[in-house]
Image 1 (spheres, helix red, strand yellow):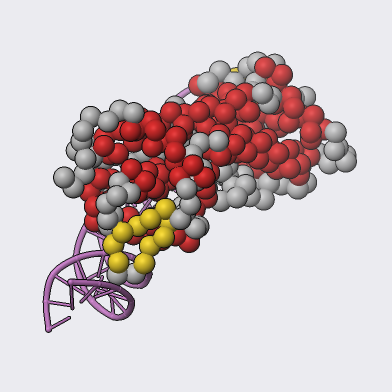
Image 2 (image 1 turned 30 degrees about the vertical axis):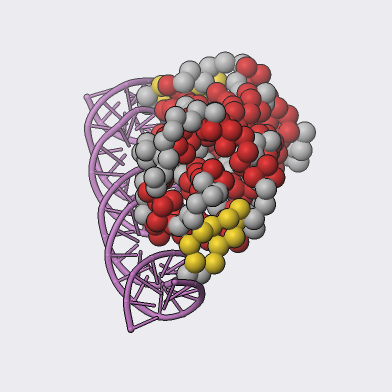
Length: 148
Length: 148
DNA sequence: TTACTTGTAATTATTATAGTTACAAGTAGA
DNA sequence: TCTACTTGTAACTATAATAATTACAAGTAA
């Protein structure tokens, strides 16, 4: 089962806030761009706010980035939207038989490789910022804008 | 949601077959070591066989590795047990709005980073073999064995 | 024949996802 | 204050994967 699309949607939200920073962004307009329900967007935005990535206020439209877009990494978003728990990208079977040499020691062995793999993945995400994503997108501008 | 424990169980199965290679290994004895149901083990063993990692025959106990344990990587197991589809570790939201500059281009941008991250993860798995896992375990031997 | 095995289907409980609806509560302009 | 809008959140749904379980046909070998 893939890692939840909350991650991709979180990136989408932050990117759109930056690209459309001269506009007032509501959960409604974001939902149209993402093509989902405003409540889904609000839930994810709540997570992004909690992580200190955006500023939003009850009752007031107009989300803002809480940091410069060059300082927000994909790893920040990934952690904010809670798609993968710390050190738990890979499930390990519970309670292998401790009376078996393999059952007794396999978890400790496997986990170190699983952690290495997860860390390698997260390192890649840490090296990409919202600025990179914004550049990918704006370099392809074709004059199409939301709410115009 | 974590990557299925089929992966960890697959590694456990191959490791036990190697460590106990002088014994006759059945789905029953493997199930005891893993601490699950024999039918679960048989299903995963079917996947390992299909991937050319083990040799098993209907009606006959006694699984064998189909390759030397130094030639079986964790990536081979990961692919065999089908826990992550090719290029689909991360879900991407479907159908973003093509009338929005962000919606139109975000997927292409995001996917390249997602693929890089997934590749980095898989590269780590490719560099670990069942031999490495077996060594981790046998270096900790304390005289405990299954079926003795 | 028997006692065992594997292969596989069907069923279940559990859990996360993603969407939907509804509404209380906050905000701001008229 | 009234109105129109917004956010925050709860409740509910449908869907899908996981993992365990049971059952049994079919293969194997003494």
